[in-house]
Length: 254
Image 1: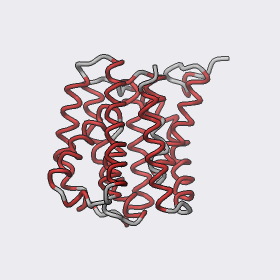
Image 2: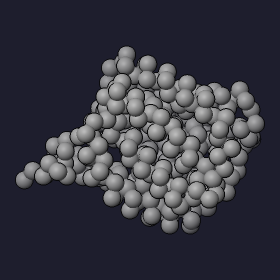
Image 3: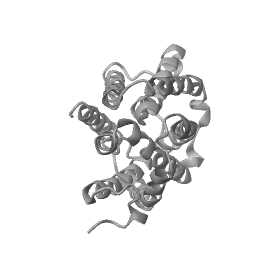
Image 4: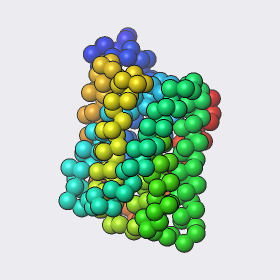
């Protein structure tokens, strides 16, 4: 029995459709505080829909997750902490738009994987080498913003890079989540026109699928917000490292 088109606009099989909806739930859980838990969605969607196409499907869900995170944590956000990252991040996005139109889908997936592996390397280095405040280094901050902008456009994979920036400040959990939500909301909104006009990865069919995904995503944000309040800080960071590394490895498996 086929799935009705109004809830399955891409006419996926049952397995793909079910995995897609479950992934929406985990995006919501991740956006509300369990950072990293949805990183497996990137390689999984790249496998199901193709590298570039998957980026367009995931993006509106990330925007909805950002809005839900701000609903919970906007009072704790400190926008001043991330303003300096915006110019280099925008430059990274524009460079990724240029690159993305000149590589095939297989190369696109490998580029996504390489971007995530670099993110993991930065996170582990910061954890092992003294936990310095990256935000105080202009050179490091600019390079981090440039790399993050590229990663977020090429595969919605900038979370580990910007998490590193925020974790280095030792922010309280609420401030960490709220500040990151404002930043991701800006970057993800900036990317939308490029996905529609340049890459053509967002259209009515993909957005129709997003509308089906949103209820489970919103449910995930409420559950994630509840869970994160019980997790100690150190296990929380190690969880981010582990799940992010696994997601990068998956991108290199055909």
